[in-house]
Image 1 (cartoon, rainbow, N blue to C red):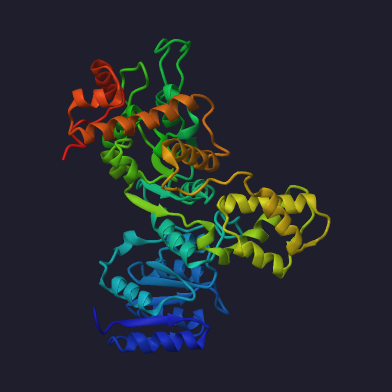
Image 2 (cartoon, helix red, strand yellow):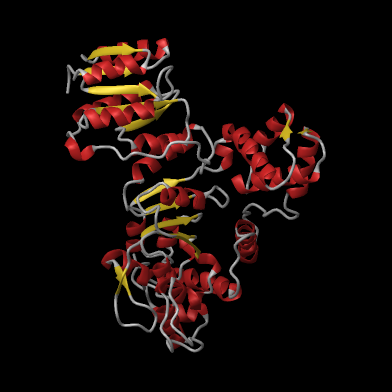
Length: 482
């Protein structure tokens, strides 16, 4: 659409000038104002095809203005700009009917693209009216104003009014559960329960019962009916953390829930309707697990409807000062005195690699608040704490001469480092053996082009034993044949 009338309200003259020139060159008529009152007069008179407004203006909050605009002219698109770059700003703008939200400073080309989309989009009519959100200060569910976090805020804001399945990928300690909770707490299912499950911490033989529940007598020790996590989460959100560690048989049952929208308890026959939104998360590369035959490809595509990648802390070091202030304030709520760090200490924190990500930073700040008397903590203390927190034995990098045993040990060290706070309660030996055994057999079958006699000889196994393991481990014999 060309020749549209675009209304811009921002108290920053430079921004008004830049936008007016850029949109004017595209053939649009642009009207600019420094306050909300003038913008409202134009809207009230029926002028304008699109509104671009700041949030903080001298006479009215732009988010409140959106509500008035959508009540009067529900088909008028509104784009919100804000230097208050938080998740709550993005969520409130979306809830109140904004077409899109752009953090300041914004990319001019990105804004032009958003304007073009807004002008080309079909009009919602009266059904597009906004949902009024609660006012007042609220605790921030996520911290950070880096470009990486801004993009996450925009994606989350667009997902709040949907039930789409979301896959969150990120290293341990990046805040995957916080993102899942934000999706629930500010989404359409906020009135229902939020149930979080760490798949990696559940023994393999109990996971189906834990997720789907079981009937009395379904197995030895099942003395009464027990409801599962799906039933606990009815009407709300089920967060499946470390989904990459889910056994294949449980994956099959989960796939049925996603396909059919129903499940049965272990030992049960009556289907139960699953009224839950599923949010999954993992620190593992699921595509790599698919290639190894350890994760179902069809389940991956069912879960990966909307992928969200959480950046590691080393990729958003500009957020570290805000995170440090936030964690120090949390320490005050726990009865500790308010602390801060000096500029040199802050630069040292920003230079650290943070292998444990935000969780590692949070633990460090808690120690600083609890163990040191000074109000302003210097770089020497920070250096000491970082040195004390470093692992005693670091995982060695891969080497051409490390051998099979060395490679296994290196990967086990990485596994223990990544799961320091979430190791399974029992069954670790069986899990490790199974995860080594499965790719070993699959790769051997691939090397012998699916010839099970040759594979059994190469592995030193009886042929019947190999066949049994192929069935138990759900290995696709043909997958590796070229």
